[in-house]
Amino acid sequence: MMSKYEEIYRYSIDNPAGFWAEAAEDIHWFKKWDKVLDDSKKPLYRWFVGGELNTCYNALDRHIEAGRGDQTALIYDSPVTGVVRALSYKDLLDQVARFAGAMIGQGITKGDRVVIYMPMVPEAVVAMLACARIGAIHSVVFGGFAARELASRIDDAKPKLIVSASCGIEGKRIIDYKALLDEAIEISTVKPARCIILQRPQAEAVLRPGRDLDWQEVMAEAKPIDCVPVAATDPLYILYTSGTTGRPRGVVRDNGGHAVALKWSIKNVYGMQPGEVWWAASDVGWVVGHSYIVYAPLLNGNTTIVYEGKPVGTPDPGAFWRVISQHKVRALFTAPTAIRAIKREDPQGRYLDRYSISDFRTLFLAGERCDPNTLNWAQDILKVPVIDNWWQTETGWPIVANCLGIEKLPIKAGSPTKPVPGYDVQIFDEQGRVKAAGEFGNIVIKLPLPPGCLMTLWNNDEYYQKFYLDRYPGYYLTGDAGYKDEDGYLWIMSRIDDVINTAGHRLSTGAMEEVISSHPDVAECAVVGVADELKGELSVGFVVLKAGVKRPHEQIVAEVIQLVRDQIGPVAAFKKVAVVKRLPKTRSGKILRSTIRKMADGAEYEVPPTIDNPDALDEVKEALCKLGYPKSRF
Ligand code: COA
Ligand code: AMP
View 1 (cartoon, helix red, strand yellow):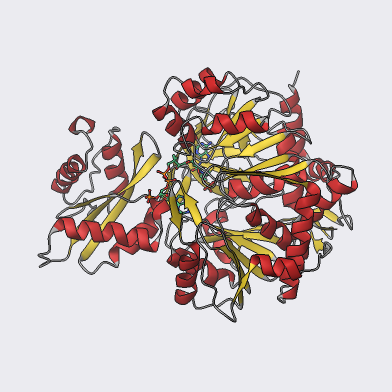
View 2: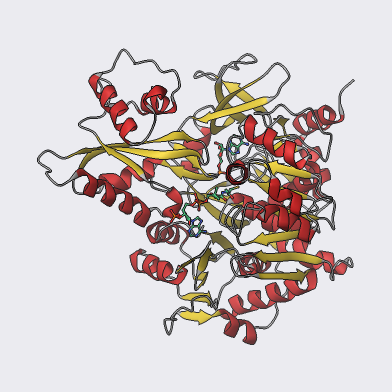
């Protein structure tokens, strides 16, 4: 007999249109779709074609009409400012409708882009939902990126308006967001007509007359605006993510498929019931923030927490347990790094003794590979199931997970469990043949992807096809590699490209190499992700200097580190660089990055027979020792 999970999974794969049409009944439509799945422009599929809805209506108005208006929609918990504030569904709608009115007042209409560059404050959520309300397309940029990265997103998205804040707060430090924004607009080719700036008391910004407006002032004058019906296939947002080069990829999400998939997922994957308190401890700048701080919990009538703090240091490693206890959190979603940071400072979990977390049911971990030690430690101290789930910015919601809302399957630490209904996941060899159980290969998903996944890359169907669909026709290339075991569990082991994961943040080593190569003394360089106990992976750079450069190496190294911080941002956490005489290469001139990485990780590696300069490997080893990696690793 098939288990409940198997039954639902089979149905979703055998009859995707039937499966998702049923799920779509849970969403309010102004006009029902004509076709559930449109495959007329294969491989570009569209969901719920002809349907009209409004995502903000489904996230707010609908709940108030159904009597949920006084329930808390959002709790802002900010240990860095000492503020805890609750907004009911009515309060949140009031702010969103007024901010939507303020945007209309500035000439923003359906289809216009709005960049949001904000710290973790409720106004970031208000701005996102207000865009959804009027059919404007938001593009949220993470605060830890430098001005140049923000500028490249402004140039690609071409926003009419940017919404930002005077500052962000990182632990005890004040980050001058407005200065970064001004610099980005200085560098960008596209200049937004308006910026709306939230002034925070920690550091007020100087506003530029004619361009900048004060959030409070525009809100005071704004008239609330009703929801605008949009097509299911109209874009809701663009979210940029790292690819293999310095050029970020603008993932485009639709309105219809997104609302259907996210509401389905928070119930069926995460097992959340309306009215319960849910906390995704991430940032609105990442996909986890979009999907599980903002949209999914509100679509489902949950209370969501916006946390402006860290797992440690704000003020101590008990910070997460305090929030869970104070707000009666049912489930927490965070990255394994956050748990490793807590474990490092409080290995016995003693801070947990100070709080009662009896309402707490589940810990979900995602964003990077979850090592079994971290999972087991969290499970031991919290005494609740710890559920790993695998997905990416492109999909917007889990590909592989233990779907607690359907049926809890046995947990195997190190595996995120089985494919989520809607995803036909396969392991392919280089030629596109299916690998046997236990054999390592490229992880692909059979097309069509389920609703809620990326429709395309912003203004670039060609790149979408080139990066994701051309490698194996009929399949989406995830960029991850791993295997399926005999029980059908997936094991996600590594990336097949230059993308690395530092503290749950997705970064491109290729982008870092582009920046380093612009240093006048650098002839060539390689950046690889090396295993790190806390952050999962850390980028390590190797630079070869131009002939005749006589300046002290320490000075050049410091400049290279600063360059990456200034051009990509502090989030790159790029702090380890060594100067070497040459880089190991094949005879055809390809840098042996994967050999360097394996060597640095202390993993087994083979020296390729095509290597041109085997001595260069010894130099890399020496450099790694100087950077503090123990000799015993190699
Ligand atoms: N705005 C500005 N700067 C930011 C920022 C933001 N929103 N987020 C991070 N930074 C800065 C940090 O201050 C740090 O700067 P520094 O080099 O001057 O110290 C740098 O970017 C690197 O940040 P991070 O990698 O986060 O390291 P950290 O030492 O500050 O914190 C952890 C370490 C483990 C506590 C932290 O990474 C964490 O909480 N991770 C959880 C991961 C997570 O939520 N991922 C989201 C996807 S699910
Ligand atoms: P992002 O797009 O920033 O969410 O990063 C997605 C990438 O992070 C994936 O392609 C994986 O490489 C990695 N990742 C995310 N979650 C997991 C997980 N649970 N296990 C292994 N890798 C993960």
